[in-house]
Image (cartoon, rainbow, N blue to C red; front, side, top):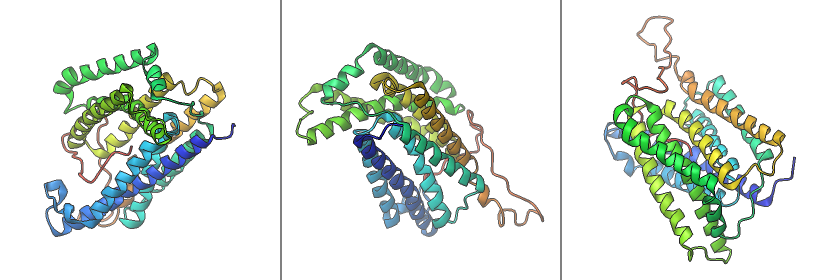
Length: 340
């Protein structure tokens, strides 16, 4: 195992900090939403009383800090290292919910947390070093190489087909349509975000990168992709159960981002087959922990009280939700958000 580079260490610290802030923000915002709902119309029913709650605003500020840290992490470390660490936000959110919101964490949920930590540690210890970037023009050359141009063209074509053909016909019944659009475009978003983050880093180092048109093109791509993702992610959250969307979106988004990074930045070019296999095992371990956490997130809250009046010995079981189709009964809560 090679020693981690200083840039990778900085990227890991920023990525973990981002997960802590973002994971905490879910709980702080939910506390604000609960306080607002107790004294007025709940957000899920169209109320906006949470805008007067200091807890909700504290959660928003915490989330913004986390997103800024995540953005900065891409300037120092490869996407294959930063993106999977987003799963840690799920852990911090689950643990804080257990202690602050009294949402009990089932033993399988604890196992999911452990799997996420083990997988993240494996990726951190075996991640490739970030290649030296001295100008945004260098990133532009990587982005305009045939391999990445073909990947980008395929992504754009597939997304166009999903938007113009499948979304009108199957969008409201098949979750994979909305999530697929967000995940595919998300891989291009991360590559552009990384380019903009490096441009800002180099500019602060004394080499202004905003005099090049390449930087502004990357900024436009980020803006366009983000608006597209927000639009279809909101549609997904309004139509399907967030508890199902979260793990599926995380898996697809992270997978396509890693593929895009491999093609554009050639992260694994200098690594041995053993290291690549180890990183893949770490990624699969994170995915397993993420699914386990989401699958069992409500199991600790389905005991006493929920079965009152239903007969002695009755147990309330968590409601199952189809992964790819909408049952018509599951609606998302406005207090939920996908981890980034």
